[in-house]
Length: 143
Image 1: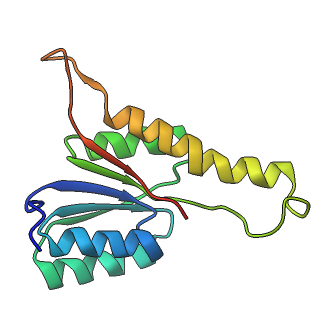
Image 2: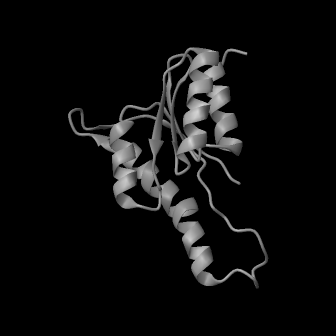
């Protein structure tokens, strides 16, 4: 199926395994150039090489922790001009409400909620040269 994504530049967070890796594969199959972002460097690099070989697309890896403001800003700068952002990073703990303490929940939501919001804000900044908002597609995935 041709989704008209050939040549589009896509940033996928949480891209080292699972849903993020599968999403990267799908975009690469469509001919999109992908930026993979995750904390887990080894898995992400292996995926990048596999995608380059299998689909002849550009793949760039970014080792980042989306809980950290400096990492968010660096990632947004390094991926300026993306067409599609797939927010997929997640670190939600398993277990019941009674067994997971507040600090653990807050740590998880710092990435899952605030990481998403802050990265989306940074990627959708106004283009100061044209005074226009850059039009991008933003996608949120849940785990």
